[in-house]
Image (cartoon, rainbow, N blue to C red):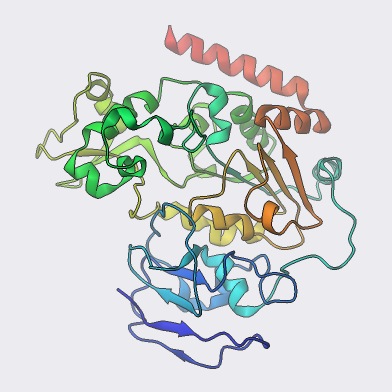
Length: 394
């Protein structure tokens, strides 16, 4: 349902002279689109990093999740707000808190202040001095590939490149809900490979666990559906699994909820799981394209403005609306990217307090751990947790 709310953006002034509003009663699946290619405007324009959603007023409180988009979309002409779990043609989706800054013109779209470029050593010292102690982490497939799990997008080795064997019309179809109902077999063939229990956490996961143990982790937002953050011991209240999880499952007919482990036997035996009550098709609580994101995703509305340092690890920042969260923190705080290449705002509009460690993700994490003086603690944590997993397997 479209709410028909539109703002015409003044080219020179940050003024929105005209707005029409209809049906202001249902704010479910709220989408906010920017009128440009990126959620922050260039220098001299109105955007920047973002304010909490509260800046939009009490009417802008979402009651449901947004839906997963296959790729960044582009907006043309006007800034529009619409409701409904659907793709908005010709629009780029951004986070709610990103749009708050874009609408009210507070923040920065570039750094012309001549501030000294921040280094990784500077970030480590800020944390050691407790000047930064509320860390938000955004994690993607790059933290799980060292565990042996293929990522989704790497040419030749990513999951999308290896889906020819499933005889699907195009790679993304395996995560489209309409195709799932038409032919669930390819998804469950892939699920057999990704199901929890097949892989173990690696150094990156235990680094995130150590952040929690030290009281530094405000929240971890992960795109991964492998559940390795849980296995590493990160509590569920510190975790936002933005694209869902295999840990739980739902009947698509009667909507009963189940533990994912209840159907592990079926998946491993190459059987399509069905509800024991109504025989409906069981679907793990993985977010497919076009489906609503989990309600916990909206914790970003408060988490990101509260954060005093943001780490982005192992993600291409290509899937919306998750990718737009990189711009949802305050403009004054450090952002650290540990990744194979520059992505998102680190590529198109880096700031003086952005730090990028490019190359192998594990090596980047190890470098930061060494700067923090946590090397021995990390080794002990990994040894202890590995022994627990060994004992469980035996």
